[in-house]
Length: 455
Image (cartoon, rainbow, N blue to C red; front, side, top):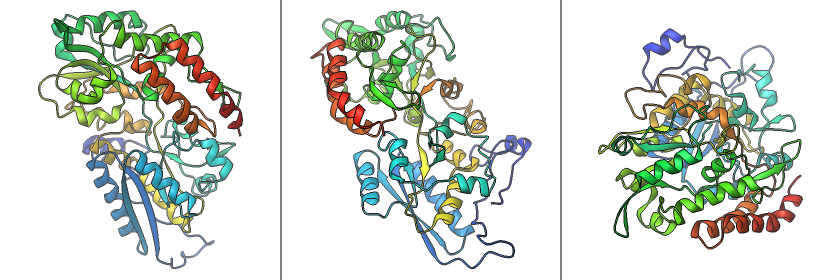
């Protein structure tokens, strides 16, 4: 594949939507390479690539429409049909239906929480990319190595990274300043910002008028990657793994895990510094933060554009507290771009994958918001770390990538999550059972599924 390369000087001159750093794949759409030896490529038959993505925000729909159009224009005879689908269950159902029918997408946004990489390998669901990478000497060095590794199993590469997300604290600068509080540090190597310091902080930020709470210090994010971040940062885990990295059993009854889980429950029911699930569901987590009723919340970088509309106060981001672990951990890993193994147009799909994995494509998504780029030079670029837009410490997003703990790998992990982890954790969130009871329940009920899903 012939792709232009931008110099660093050109990158610094360019805008956030049209630049890339030294050594990055370029802005020009990738073109389908000749399949024969020598001479010109044979005339390609007309091909339609089905490109299925879940909708993150309208900006991403426009960016992906742009990719489809520019690639088709650069490759006459190839039409890219972008099919946006609402994020969540509708998207999961759409992808599962296409694969079950034997008509998988020629390109789609691959989520390992729905289909673990071990399942992709066992069922040969995706087109293997290694021969293409070798044939075209495709340069992977600008991607984070751990992001690329997420999509390899048994020595085979089944996708390329789109992003590499994580979890960070978002905080109301004005509310912390009013209390004379030092904000959460942006440095993920900091050792002073502990669970204890955090608890004191959110207690001071919680305000009441009689029995009514008018301001909460913190909002507990009950998503698995967010709550798992507290476990990792206390020396706990979601699962135990074997040498290959396959999850063998639950770790939810481990002492460090239980302690972190209990800490989260106590924030709601003992210390009363966090709204309980019923109130959060009624008022909405982001809305509580945006209206100043919650001072701090934990979420991933994809929410940045939702917060940038806030005008009533200044906000910023920082690291999560450190418990008893020597090193923080954050749930994340992002998503990838993959091609169904049954595609009728493998060469064309590979060319399109190169296009949407380019530096310019990632810059397009940066401009649209809701992404943490997997290319090192994009996540460290002025385009992503734009000093003219909040958060002031956006570099914390890039540093947090070093602390990501990948999702558990087990063929049955999606079923284990839906059938066992989520219902049991609902008991914790509702206050119906303590952490030790919930952890033991998960361990006992998941054992058979873990054993059966090790591949």
